Image (tube, rainbow, N blue to C red; front, side, top):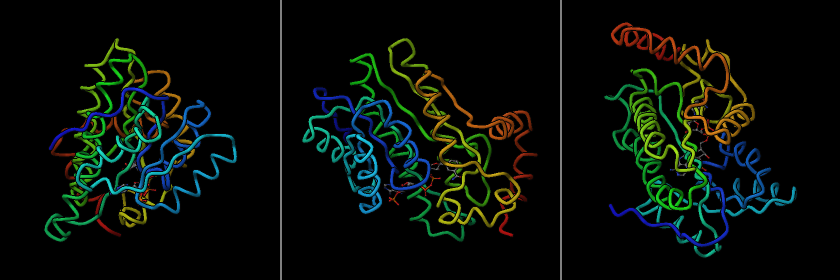
Length: 267
Ligand SMILES: NC(=O)c1ccc[n+]([C@@H]2O[C@H](COP(=O)([O-])OP(=O)(O)OC[C@H]3O[C@@H](n4cnc5c(N)ncnc54)[C@H](OP(=O)(O)O)[C@@H]3O)[C@@H](O)[C@H]2O)c1
């Protein structure tokens, strides 16, 4: 699949995927204070338009792009929109994502591949369209919204956990490769967050999500954006997410797998 080159000339803008709800919408509100135009990307045009109106009322320039990131050449569509608006991607926020609770043999295969497609392939495709220009300009960066799911195996939600583990690996490598270039690459790793994701994925029916405290999307976005602007490689938005990642790193994989098999069962 060709990776589209994004425009190199224009006004710097922040491109946020998955901006129609949850963490993405809060990242749009949070980043708006930087004063750059914001490009809001997701499928739900109505929600994006409502957010764009809210941002415009507060004096911010916001553009809406209703797009399914699973569509062929989604990156090309974003590039064309940026060219038309006279914008360049100064910051890319790879936030769009979804997951589904269920065993691999029970969930439709297309849904499981779709999760990898949106959370991983599309995120990588957009990053590869944006990063070369950022490095040439020596500014801007990439904020990848990962998860503590990237630190552990995920029986009962395998594709989702795998997508976040691979995104973490890519994000770390891109951080190292762009170090000293003036470009920031940050991985934001929340634990459970109160957003439509919990309902959509079925995660709120699992023991794991029921027993853990839920952060607010606004707090996650605030800490994520601040960490990104400070050039941090990884941001845990609260002590609980930091502790869980540490515990997962310390436990032998076989034990972690047994614990996760129990905790991910639907209640
Ligand atoms: N909530 C949690 O507990 C939690 C924890 C850790 C990490 N995260 C991560 O945080 C990110 C944001 O999730 P959230 O919690 O804020 O949930 P959310 O409110 O459901 O937001 C997900 C966003 O992704 C967009 N999206 C999904 N599929 C898409 C597609 N095919 N094309 C374009 N956009 C698509 C959705 O927009 P449309 O439906 O309008 O397309 C929505 O804007 C995700 O990457 C998620 O994995 C969430």
